[in-house]
Structure formats: structure tokens, C-alpha cells
Image 1 (cartoon, rainbow, N blue to C red):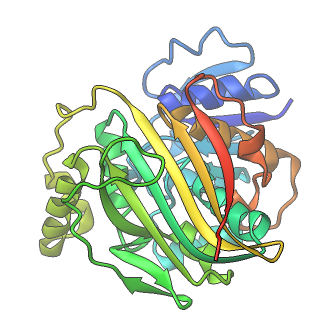
Image 2: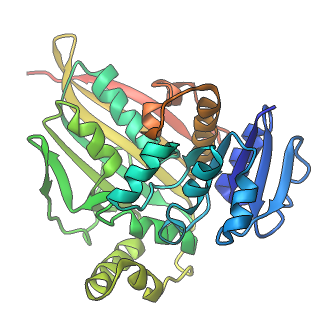
Length: 354
């Protein structure tokens, strides 16, 4: 039986991954503290792991076909786990945002290992659903507006990863896509407004992730606006502080100095992804809308990472770095079964009358 290593096994995402994969694989779970919720699982083995002890990390990854990283924060871990996987000849799956690496580091991993990045909800499902609209649901995609976010409980690690996602290595803030290039979009992000399929007014901020840019560069989409949305302004206020601080020091130093409080948590959690596109289908001008509504994103993220690991075990892709949307079945969300009865995914067409 194949063995898969999960770094950060006891977190919300790690637990989902382990429970999923233990059905068909031996799962080696690693972190500092024993994950009591997983110890009774068949095929699960816990190993103490200190990510920053290189020999410990190498020993943990040895004899595994795939190594999944769902530990953070990203700006601290960077490519440590990916490098360890490459060292022992294992395939690497990153369940977080993306690898915060410079070009030289990216080229090294691409040349010497098989790496799957953005294996979660965002990025991951975000890229898959945009690709589904462009390549499958519309014959020609003209204009697209996308909204993602909501009100989820934060940890210091998740806040750090959200703020770092705006770093230029993996995305472009205050930007949109038009005429086959990235352009600047300035809006008042401290003013609430309603967006499609969301019942409450939200703050929104333009942002293009590298995942979305990579899809757009090989598409004929005329214009796309992508907005991160939030029910409260806490993250956006932190983002403004972080931006000012990194102008005066390095990104890493700015993150260390930032005062992150966990007191401002939402009373009710929800998260939405809405893709609203206009284009042509069967010779008719139509509006196509994809609507994904969930209480939290951790279960979907863990399920995506587990599916990518399964694909990695069964495939013989050459060395390189692959986005999750390049690997996932295009109808993944249509087949996905939610455990929460209030969660939903739907696709709608509306003909545009002249």
C-alpha cells in the first residue's frame, strides 16, 4: 500500500486530508503535537515533526510516494517541505495558497521534482471553475466578474497567508484583466456594497492571483474583474497597515511587526465564490453564473488536496509544477457531496435579450 505524508496533519484541513486518504493509503501524519482526533484511524501513523529540523523533516518524508503540506504560515515555511520531498524523490502537494519563491527557486523545483500547487479552495477550485466557464460552459467568454470571500474564523496563520497572498510573487493587488494584460483598478475598498448571490453588503478589493493570470494568458477573455470580499473590514485594515510597513522594511519583517488580533471574529461563518460571465453559447448571447456557498472552506480544501494526492499517486507526469486546476476533473464540483446541508453549488444560464 502506498504511503502518503501529511505535514500539519492535525489542523482543520489536515484532518480532512488524513480521514479521506486513510481509506486507501497508509498516512504518515506529522506535527509537533499528537493529533488525538486521528489516532484511532486505520492506516494512520503519527510521527513527531519539527519542520525546521532538516534531518527530522527528511526522515519524515522518506519512503513516501507523496508529501502534502498544509502547515503554515507560508512566508515562514516557503519551500522547505517541497525541497524535502524533492530530496527523497516524493511528489509534492501544497494545500495552501502557492509557493512564495523567487524565480530561481521555482525553476529548481520545476526541473527536479513533481509539484502540485494551489491544491485547495483558493487557489484550486477558483481556477477550476473559471476554467470550466471559459472552456466548457461558454463557447466565447467576453466579460467576467468574480467575487470570493465572506466571514470565516481566523487564525494568525490564516491571516498571515491572506496578507501574503497580495505579495507580488503570487498575485497583483488593485488589478484587473483587459486586452490581454493586467491593468490597475482603484476603487474605494472601505465602502460596503451588495454583490451577486450574497445577502449582506460587503467590502471588496480588486486582486488577481497568479493562478487566475495564468488561465487568462491562454484565454480569449476580453475583461475580468476579480474581487476579494469581506463582511467586515478587519482584514482590509490589516492589509493597509501591512502595505505601509513593508514599504519601510522587508515583507518578512513587516509581517513579524504586524499586530494581529483574534478578538474580532464573525458570529456566523460563511464563504462564497461567485463567477458571473457574459459570452456566447450556441450562437446566443448569454449570462453564465456559477454560485458556490459554504459555511467554511476547510472541508473542500482538504478534499481537493486529497484528490490531487490520489492523482499524483496514479499519474506519471514529468518533472514540473502544476496548478490543481490542471489536474482536477473539470466536473469536480458537480460531483462533490457537501456534508453541510446548507452548502450548495449551482450553475445558471440566462439568455440576454437584445
